[in-house]
Length: 324
Image (cartoon, rainbow, N blue to C red; front, side, top):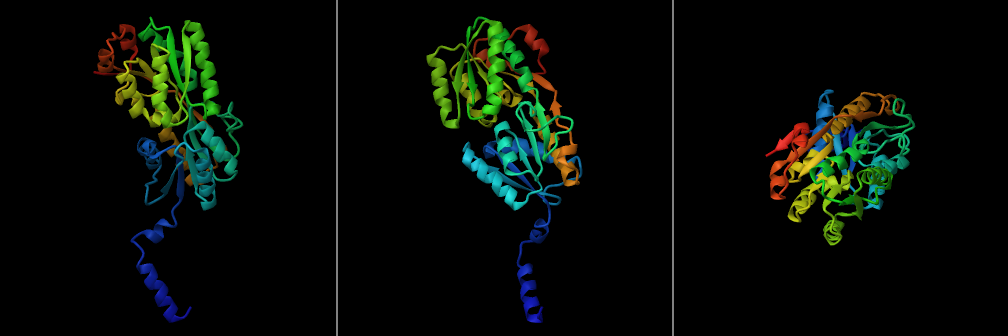
């Protein structure tokens, strides 16, 4: 290279923002989710899992966050784009989305945290030896569906009709959840009113249907769409005076009545841990899929009081957390 050309190139590098050239060389982790509302809670725990293994954002890795905004075609395009970029790993948190990403790449590691059995849904071949390029964890939500309905029934034993919010677009998860819930409803002798919510725009109409059909209580499914909009669902249930049970404590801290399910933060942190192992060179196929087994019952006494409900002492005795 001629001296004049070298000086020109050097001058160009000097004008780059401090650390820009270094950032180009650190691994990029793709993050695919429905919308930015989920990002803060999820990424905080993912970062913690990475930090436990010595990985610090900005120094050892950077995120490339992509939002699908509930459009399946956008999700596919984002997954393909991350694959073409050659990211070090892709993180995903919804069963149907993981299947889309799996179809987009057979080589880039995919780390997931989902609510359904990854073997039954065809995501991995087995839990101990997942094979391929996917690994991660799944929660107890599917196994706890019947118990969650029992908790709601214990809280409002006189209710005979219970509405059930489900996302039909997440078919791989919703089909199994609906089957489990219907079986539990039959055993308890309560009628299940199935109400579909495919996008955030359906939420108001769902509550209108619930009221029109005179459902006495509400069971909100474990789909990521609902978790993303817990700040709308919990207050709306309270506004319409509908006793509602949710899958995670974050709904209750948003004003919801009661939740029973897996502690989501444990799963997000494990995703960070597994991502760190992959950055160290380990293969997803050698990392067994784990099940998060910690569950918790959270009760909001203030919400119960506003609904005119007296929480049975048996439920209070079993609660892991009571918000007063």
